[in-house]
Length: 638
Image (cartoon, rainbow, N blue to C red; front, side):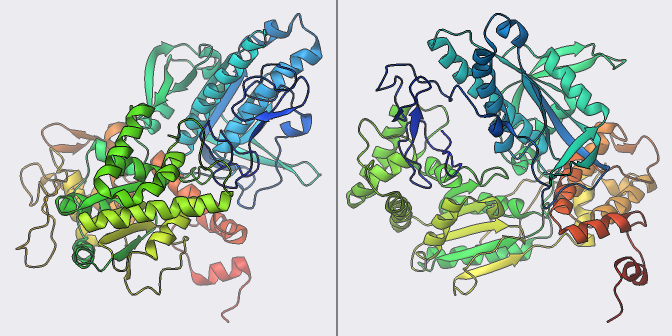
């Protein structure tokens, strides 16, 4: 359930928002009376209460925002994901009913579609009488726009099913939606409308293909192309619908149905499933983490922050340390999502599920039992924290004992309860608590991390956090805080990594626990060290030139190197057939969509003047004289 006041996600059973403490109610469309959130029938007139209000004001369907601060330049080429959604058979549905009654059915469905697009920061280009056309990745770029589009599509179908059930309860014909999605290049054109608004229109074949996917989608489903599937593999599950002929395309198109969420949530998890590359160049950072853990284990809690630009290796560093040290402590890990700021407590809930051993398939009874069992073995003095944890995890049975509590007090006590449990657990065993990607963190989780950071000076807790440079916090002055600034790999380390990526078979990471007799270096041993048979060093001058080109283009950023090699393999430019070989000369490397999205996202978040300057200078290449820059921006030597 989404709070109409602050937009935070709440359990479906919630009576009050866990973020702003606003009371939830359901307005009866028949008499207008407010009803409790859990009510199924109106307390005044006994009419059934639908999931959504049955009437939506036309002003709520406005789709043209004012110009975003970080919007695409006019006629800019972008890789985007287009989404089309419509109500299946809407013409037949409304053919024999009054127009006002038809509007009462269709408008809430359209508003629902628009809400789901906006929830994942999509942009609604157009709203038709019975559907919408939306973009993800423009006018503002997002590095994960294909995933955002499919998250929105799944939520849209879920909400549509709830809405249809409400229509059915009221004796009306239920409706179903079809959704089509495709990812590809477009030219985004902006047009000022003269009233302070700007319309953005994408021009290109890829949006037309998304519309074709919608037309092919069975009612109640989501159809997408192979281009989107490849970018979202692991995040979602797909069912192949086979090759289909599409109007305007000469060859059949492989079509897939998006069936559910997959097991993976982050790009690092996707990379790990594919097979991690050789871990190189981070011995100093690993030693810093090992030393911090030794201090924490002795009762001197520590905070270590890894700071770096996207793709440099923040998550990989923590993964390697976790694998190397997990036998010595309990490891609890949580991550933030780029679209997760509207989901209050999301990383904290993930961390608690890990601590209590709650699995995705567990029912409410099993989840409560897991929490209760942990309380029994931990400390009876923590019994007063149980209602707060049950409330946060959506496990409260019957009457909520905290229902009448002030919202802010409830939040403070909930955060305090979680902190007390972790500090108490650290008396039994050392804890390593990992929070990934704080630059995407929600406000409530940030408050919890601040509370924990203030409380671990004498606890056996190592708090590991990572984030991008734009994130800021207030821990810098703490004596037990250490910051690790990660830079791209140096030339030697980058060459080692590429040697491993281009070897046959590829040398993958095989991390072993840090040895106690490794001379204090904290080295991590990996498979494939050295230059054996089939390594890149023996593959000839072509591969040597390719390595130089990749290092030059990526400047030692591990993620970019991995994605370029993977793209060359998928494209057939590189083949493994007993040895690694180039099938054609390469003087230029096409930037893979995964890398392109990261770069576009960073560029779009620059101040407007810097972004315009970057676009102007980009036509000159990677390097240009300082005097030329000064001429462009009108700046003197002073």
